Image (tube, rainbow, N blue to C red; front, top):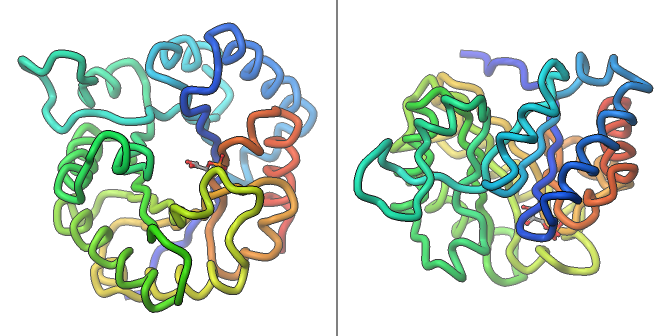
Length: 254
Ligand SMILES: O=C(CO)COP(=O)(O)O
């Protein structure tokens, strides 16, 4: 079966870097940039992932713009006695479109395991949102070692998520997150090609897009375009002008 066409996509996470006021100003400035070339949103998908507290106000600011809003995490149960957790059901109710799960910082600092990530991805999809699943090897080394580490992460998720659900995989080598530079282009393209070739990805009915993240920013997509469907930015997208520049590059790449 031919795989369905994949639209390019680019997004940014503000992690826990921004104040509420900065998030508001960031979105306002982003919308100003986008108003200069509204066609961009017909060419590619764009998303912003703010913190949980500002999520609903970001959704309100972005209303009518086609820019999608995502959450940085969500629990795997819809409701109940889970103090402090965020319900995927409520996220969907307020208009959240994407749920990021399994970021390296959540795995390392909060002890999230592949099983938790898989359950969270399943719940996000079950609630009609797109799970954006972060995967990646912990240490810099051979392509084959990276692929082995990612394979387990991807297989767990794909076994849990409905076969026809859309999934976004964010390939983020852990060692390239928070670094000065992204991982090498040849290396990323090789790893991503092998991730795409995994049976559990190939055989899915739903669309699976693969993004690269880890010190990504303007100037990178051109070097990765034969392998990835887009980029997932952190720090280098925290200036709206830089995020907009990255979008333009992705939209215009042949
Ligand atoms: O973790 C990332 C996106 O989720 C990437 O962060 P940086 O681009 O700041 O390294």
